[in-house]
Amino acid sequence: MAQFDIYPNPGIKKVEIPYLVSVQNDHITSKTGATVVIPLRANAQPVDIMAPLIVVPGQGQFVLSTDEIFAIDTARLKAPVAMLSMVDRAKIKPAIDKVIGEY
Image (cartoon, rainbow, N blue to C red):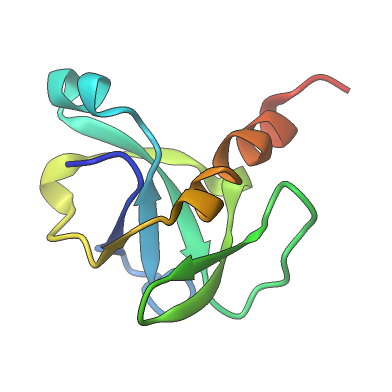
């Protein structure tokens, strides 16, 4: 399991959230059996920094729903469908910082 891999959502909200992107580094994931993911929402409005548009190659654009970040058992995730581009990877840390940062 690689950081920034994009997986089909194994949960019940596949229509609203078709994909999950793994944001946890591989070293931690290999030790815990779980990974931190951020949902990629279809038909949602992007929000500056916190919920940017992300491209899933071959599938289109989705909103990175950073405020819904969670951990999932890696056994629930099947084969990745793609990997985030370098441009989209650069959006992850600022989005997380926006959600958990001080105001």
